[in-house]
Image 1: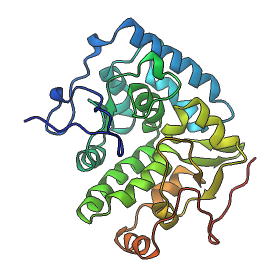
Image 2: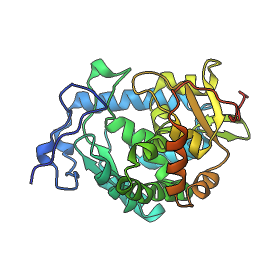
Image 3: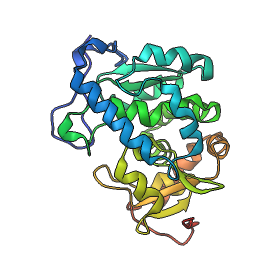
Length: 284
């Protein structure tokens, strides 16, 4: 049975990736042999650029875990990463042709299977790409799946996502994913650091999120986070800051049903909103 392609946001562009290869759960084999030398070179150059930017900007937990990806001069084979990832945290990565719908995405996370897009951007998209590609997913997301606490949080998010989908609250919960797993900041002894994949895989946003005086950084609050819209085509106006991955895991333990009710009653906030109850986090 063929699955339907998925596009990014409200984009009218044709979907990326070959969805004819996908199974009903949207996973597919990684067609490693199809990568060209140019594809491998793009990955190598992206890896070199981003890894050089990490000191002083990325979470130490991420820096420590990055070598677990293995090779850096070519696109890794997913099964080789899984040989290290499964014993570490019980997770595995699975190939997908591109973006996938909400419920299959939640279901994969709930079963400790992280979907990784298997195509890579063109050289013309080296500095900016709208949709996540194999570099974004591997470099940005996978290293922290080797961290037991963060890995447990991602699974808990997937389990909560299945419940949110049935409650019609998937969009609200997606904002938590966006502002933590994709664009989260953490306060470490040395200062603010990035742990979100969307930041870590972007040269410009990595600097902006941690050092720019124009960005708003506030302590993570679940209701505030779920009320806040986000940007998909520009740097984030607001970043939510955690103190530890343990805090993030414990924060998501309660039943979110009453939280969704609070979010709906209070209404949405624009991405750059500032409200009296915010707890600002200063630089340094």
